[in-house]
Length: 449
Image 1: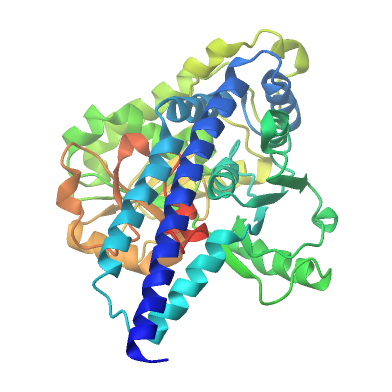
Image 2: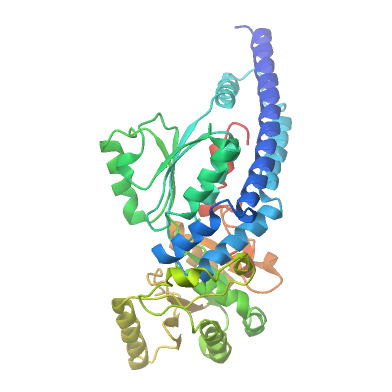
């Protein structure tokens, strides 16, 4: 192919990509608007099945009613804020920027021609995506479902047995509103996942279960070894506290980040870094923790659940007034925490202990990776040390939060995957937040974004 022919071919490919990209953006925006509308309707329509799913979750899972209503309230508020349309709009802006820069590239490059051909193929095809959902929090898998539907792809889901009611209720509801072509199948049992030509697997869960799940699916010939996986395995987050005043002023948001969902979320704070020692903050921290537990003293105790009769008293008002629950812990966990308190006293370690919760001070050289949801590590260190700690924890770390108003001070030294977030967004993130630093929609649509 001579230079002029190659240039015309490349230009033709670029034009086709541009037109297909514009069409994708338009369709994705329409999908976002409809999906937003239909999801909000699930919250508002008395016949949607939401209340039944809530009741089943309260009586049949380890989630408390307060955490369920809190999560639903947070999701609904983000839908009403237009997160889905905003998510797609972000992609469209990035696509336009990419297309403009593309004209600067060498139009005679064979590699560029191959890239154009790949993008055209991907834009025309509909991919099959298998989502393996975690179940540590209520509706933790909803973001993956939304991303697959916004991308225009086909969804198949492995629903966690720890959260088996809420997500299926939403999926069933969406099918009634015209999403049947994209929502293919869901199941709680790995063996029941249908064999399909899956283009991607989105896995969210513990690193310990990842290899077993993958091996099971390959041995059952549900997947082949070449199938791409996006694995989200981060387990905790870090908060940076610049001063004693910041803790006092944002104590409610701070405790929410530590204690909401029993500390089980990957966005839950497991380590706090501060130039202020834990002893200087003992009283305000104790008061804040006691306040949380005292407000919920009437909630379920160890190894008990609310019974169905009590569920009749629940209504949509709960979505607006969820509180942090004192969730039940098993006997071994309780004994372990009692031992830790005794050990801390014996070795003269600084700690704050309230109920079943501990905040322990550790030197930065020896602070371990958090392993108990109810034990938070406090590290007396500065911002430079925070950078080293972030690098040390690596893929186990989810997010970095900042207490106070000037988060920009902490934004310099980190890799692009880490955004410094305000502490008040820890348990109320936008629906387009980046698990393990990856924007799911952009990952699914590399040809356009």
